[in-house]
Every structure is written in C-alpha cells, then in structure tokens.
Image (cartoon, rainbow, N blue to C red; front, top):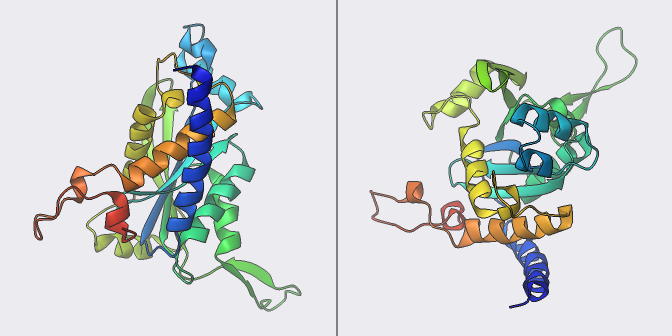
Length: 260
C-alpha cells in the first residue's frame, strides 16, 4: 500500500472520528477532572544530540514545539478532551473550554492538575460570577463560584530526580477538596491522567519515546490523536472497569461513563 494512501485514509478517519467523538461526548456527569500536558519528542533528542533536560528546555523555548493537552475522568477513565499545540495559555483555555462544553450544565467537578498556572484563569472564567463591591470598593469583582474546587500537585525536579511534591489549593479549601475525595477513598493526585499519558505514548506513534515514527506537523499528530482517542474511549476495554459485583467485564470508558 502506498504511504500516500494510508495518509489519506488517516486524514479522513481523523476528521470523521473527531466529529463522532464530539457528537457522542456531551452532557456528561463527572465528579472529577484531571488535566495534564505531554511533550512530543524532538529529532535532536531522538538522535542523542540532547539529553532529556536539554530537550525539555528546547521545547519550552521553541515557538514551534508540539504538546498534547489531555483531560480524563478518573472514575470512568474516559478521555474527555485533547488539544495539540504549544504549551501556552491559549491552549490551556482551549482544553478547559472543551471539557466544560462536554459536561452537563450546572455540573462543577473537582479539577486537579500539575503546577501549571495556565489553568487558573480559564477555570475562573468558566466558573466565576460578578460579586457586589465590598465596603470601600467601587467596582464589582469577578470571583470563583463557591462550588469550584481546584488543586495542583506541584513537583520539583533536580535534573531527572524528583526532589519534592507539594499540594496547592487554588480555589476552594483543602477541607472541601478532601471531603469530595473521601467518598472515593482518594487523595489529591494526578495519577490517572499521567497513566493516560503513558497509554497515549504507547498508542500514538508520534509521541512515543525513542521511536522513528515522529510526526512531521501538528496536523498529522492531531489526526493520530483523534483516531486513538476514539479507539481508546469506545473500543478498548479497561480491566480496572470490570465489576466483580455485577459480573460485567470488557467495559470501555464510554460504557463506564454511560454513553454506550
């Protein structure tokens, strides 16, 4: 088969599956959303010219670097949204806007991310309201809604070593967040979206580590992501979603979230 034929099919499939996924994934009821970004491997790092720290620094400084922004519902393992682009505030707005557009109106889940502050303003914009001016103030203020809860897991590294992990509450209180998590027996973490990122690296050739199948453009990477996202949510059974109580097995994330 000619490579051009495969690329043509990939282009058509990517567009169709992206439309299908958006059509099917509306009005979702989720209690928690975890968001993260993963970087694409650059060719200099691939050939050994740069170490991992230098490659990350180059990605941060480059205006043409490609990142994948992801979001997941930890309970159903449903991959909610994906944005391919630079690691900028603009793409943080895009991923948050996608997630909010998929949720049932009035539903405000708990949000958990890493230490990237780019998520703060988009969340505040979507889940905020004007408050009357306090005594001594002339202008009303835009403040977060009481039901908005958002915390970050801040990791500090020295070279390749993880030296510390701290948790920072951005909106709400630590007590409110812990109460929300207590029902599922969990703590503040981003483990689920990080596990999703590992799955994505295994399924999307252009995002694999130490591979030769690098994506040449953001558009081609976006097509791969659209294909894999739909396959992951609607076709790939997740073992952790098996129910011993009901005997239901081979459940996909789409089944767990109630779409199919």
